[in-house]
Image 1: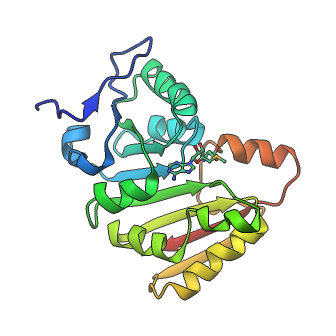
Image 2 (image 1 turned 30 degrees about the vertical axis):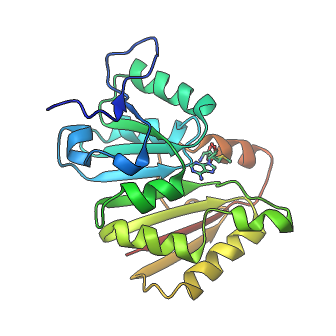
Length: 212
Ligand SMILES: C[S@@+](CC[C@H](N)C(=O)[O-])C[C@H]1O[C@@H](n2cnc3c(N)ncnc32)[C@H](O)[C@@H]1O
């Protein structure tokens, strides 16, 4: 397989396990080129330090995982840990998730989108910056395979209601929707960094699962 010009190896200590970082979401190589196989693909949007994703990738070598975040400061830890554990099925993209989903991810190519604790933008004038809108859910829906899932979590009650409204008003027909408070819907070996932090602080956590 030839090296795609948009794929680079990060400057980390281990270097050999192939936790490639991809910079430009508008010219993403195919998942088959990125991973070297045609296994199912799961994506975490806003993965941060990727505690959840690293544990899930280690436990599921037959699935490919992709972490997207705009901030390299957090992603750097994730890449270092991925290389240290020699996980070949986990790659990272440092980019805006909206742009990536719109321009980089082909239709019907993803099994699960994980979106945990997206920035809540609590001030009224900043609400329009929130990632999860009806339009964004439509774009995710188009990129999911049949029976694919969107897994969402937030600690922010107002954002949770925005997510529920987006599901109702976006006109997408999901084959099933499930919601829960204080209890994860998607089984996971590891929780995310924010999930651990918020649980320890005694916050109510809201979960939502959408199935195509
Ligand atoms: C509150 S943190 C949650 C991190 C992780 N999901 C967790 O639960 O521990 C939100 C993350 O989303 C990232 N983020 C915010 N906007 C984004 C965007 N448009 N595209 C990609 N990542 C984004 C932030 O950089 C940050 O790492």
